[in-house]
Length: 265
Image (cartoon, rainbow, N blue to C red; front, side):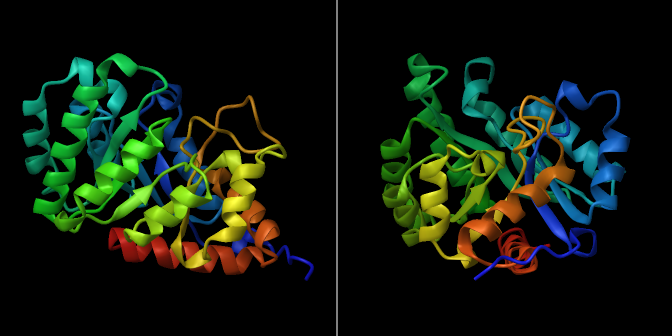
C-alpha cells in the first residue's frame, strides 16, 4: 500500500509534549505558538520540570488558548527540589488548564547517583496523580527495567498516562500497553537509523500512540541540529504513517483522538 500524503494544513494535530518555558523560546514564544496554529496544531501540552517552570507553564496556558500545562518535577531536577515541593502541585493542578502531572520519571543516563531520590520523587508524584485523578507524562531514560517494575508495583493506584519520547524496546512497549499506558513518539522516530523505534511503531496499535515534539529538543529529520518547535509534530505523524502504511490523515485522526481521551481535552 502506498502511503497518501494529503495537505497537512487541513489536518489537526496535538503536540502532547513540549517545553515552551525553555529559555530557547524566551524571545519568540508568541511566534512559535502562532506558527503552530498556522500549521494545524490545535493543542500543545507544555510541561514543567520543577515548581518554577510548572508555574510558568500555567502562565503560558493562560496566555494562549491552544496551550495546556502539566506540572511536575523532572528526575534531573530532584537534587534542587524538596520532596515537600510535590504538595505544591496539588494547588497548581487545580487550575482548569492543568491536564497532567509531568514531566516525571527516572533518568539513569544523566545522574545515576540520585537513583534513590529519583525513585522517591517519582513514586510520590504517581501517588499525587492518582489522588487528583490526572494522567502522568513519564520520562524514562536508561531506566527501562526499573520503570516497568515501578509501574507494575503501583498498578493498584490506577494511574494512567504516557511514556513520552519512548526509547525502550518492543517488549517494554508491550509491558506498558498491558498496564494501560500510551506510547509517544517524538522526532527520533524520523531518524533513518532509528530502526528500534521503527520496529516499535510497526508492532504496536495506532490506538495506543501519541505524537509529540519534546521541543526545543529532538528536531525531526530533515531539521536535525536546529531548534525544534510544535509545528514540526506533523513530521512525526508523517513518518509514522509511512512506517505503518497508512495516510497521514489516519495517523492525525487517531493520535488526536488518543490525546483527547488521555488528557480530557
